[in-house]
Amino acid sequence: MNREDIVKELSVQTDSKIILLVIDGLGGIPVQGKTELEAAATHNLDRLALNACCGVTDPVFMGITPGSGPSHLALFGYDPLRYQLGRGILEALGSDVEVREGDLVARGNFATLEGGLITDRRAGRIPTSECERLCAILNKAYSTQRDPEIALFAGKEHRFVTRFRTPGLADALTDADPQKDHKPPVPTKALAPEAAKAAEVVNRFIDEATKILKDEPVANTALLRGFSLQPSIPQMQDLYKLRPAAVANYPMYKGLARLLGMAAYKVGPETRDLFDTLETHYKDHDFFYIHYKKTDAAGEDGNFSAKVRAIEEIDTFIPRLVALKPDVLVITSDHSTPSLLKGHSWHPNPFLLVSPTALPDNIGVFTERECAQGLLGRFPSLYAMPLMLAHAGKLKKYGA
Image (cartoon, rainbow, N blue to C red; front, top):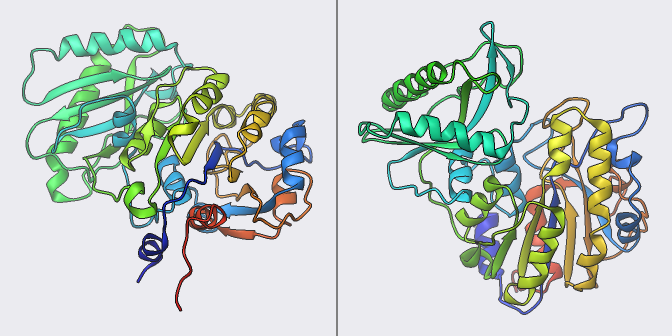
């Protein structure tokens, strides 16, 4: 019996409540001696840490830099090496895109192409209204095409979802994205013979879209990644006997939540909207996943001070979580995004668990280095869900 089967067998339904706050990309590495978390004024997080059991987590295993999908799956107790999800399906479901069996979806960025190089993968983070205008231009160009049917769905800022609908598509494709600025565009490649048709369809679309957008001053090409068909994955209700809900205002995270069976509420764009939504629906569920994005965005931009400000902003909302008096409160991250690296990294994530059944380790400061000294030590993110369930009284004894 594997770990997933054991947890499923032992899970019991109770009225106890769990809140999991994921501060995306929270972990960092020092700049002038301090990480962003160490440089931030986090009075509320520090106060929690004093009464918490702390540690640091690895989303996959040491040295592996995870994407957002795998790192979140691990936090929810799903082995990211077993369940490999394309980012596209997460973004699509989170954006309320209809995905039928056989549809191929991908996460897209509008980007800037100059002199044969991608000079800005995010096209300066164009406003969402501009993204909507560009998607409308491309949708009009493809409105009469039936094989394949191609449709774009605008997301936040530069992000969008592309859906390809024609028989015989497979998702064994490499990303059509150089991943770094100042590199030439890269076409997608088939990783298996059955994906050859999909690679041809995708690359033709990117070429055509670039021609259509050639006169746009900033967002004049498209990058696609995370190609995916509709996957099959167990639901959290079946695995853990929970009534789970997600509170997130970015499509990808809502999409993942829906894929796992969580209710995903509509949330406004501001940080306070996350907590307003949580409080409104608190009586309706026993597990709440709250996602905060600003820390990750600042880290990817390489903006140390903006990440510090984002950490300090979320710290001001911690009293609203505490006031709900959940039976278990966990605050952690899906992965680290050091501003020094301008991207995700393999560094461990600080982890804090508060519960009447948890043994406080008197850390007193919520930082990467301090949490590493906590009683939980360094452990895989996969163990976060069993820990939360156990402290909430939702796991029976194993064995006689």
